[in-house]
Amino acid sequence: MFEVELASRGGAPLFQPYHILKALWYLYTAQQIGRKELSLNLGIGEGSTRKLIAHLESEDCATSSKQHGIVLTAFGREKVDSLGLLGAYVKGGSLTVGAVDYGVRLTGLAETVTHGVEQRDEAIKVGADGATTLVFFRDELRMPDGFDVEGAEPDIARALTETFRLVEGDALFIGSAGTPEPAEDGAFAAAVWTLKK
Image 1 (cartoon, rainbow, N blue to C red):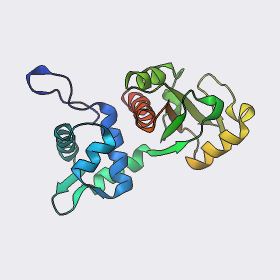
Image 2 (cartoon, rainbow, N blue to C red):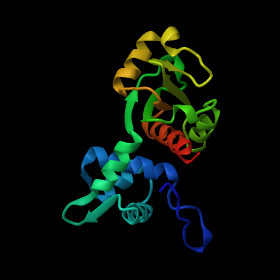
Image 3 (cartoon, one colour):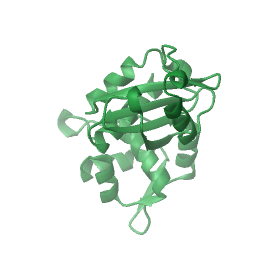
C-alpha cells in the first residue's frame, strides 16, 4: 500500500510513501477533490499526482472521474478508519521544536514505537524541523521513553488527548516546522514510517 513508483528510466520516485497517507487523509476529509487541488495539497506535480491516484485506484482505495473528481471508495474509507488516521494542526508548546505543529494519530501502534528518534529523522528528511512522538498508555500521554507529558504539560496533554480522541494504544506524531506544509509532511512521514515497520 505505501510503496512508491520510480520515474521512468530509473529516476527519483514520483511520490513518497507519506504522500499516500496524506492523500488518503485529504480525500477522507474532503469527500471529493480535483487532481489539481490534491496536487497543491500534497506539494507534488500533477503528473506525480496522477500516478499516485492510479496507485490508490490499483489498491481499490479511490476512484476518479471528470464529474466527481477523486473520491475514496468504501474500501478506502475503511482503510482510513482501520488505521485510526486523524490529522490536525495543534500547539505542542515545549514538546515541539517549530512554530507550526501538525499531528497525525494512528491507532494500535504505540507498542511499535521504541524511542521516537526514527520518526524524528523521517520528518527531518522531508523538510520538517523535527517530530515529537507520543503514545497513549494506561490513560496517560507519554513519550516513548516514559516521560510523563501530563505531569510536565497538563494543558497541552489535555488538548492533544481531546483533539485526537486518544485511546489506549494510540500513537501521535507531531511534525514541526516554520510553515504548515513541512510540518504536515513531517507528521505523515513519521506516521507512515511507523506503519511500515
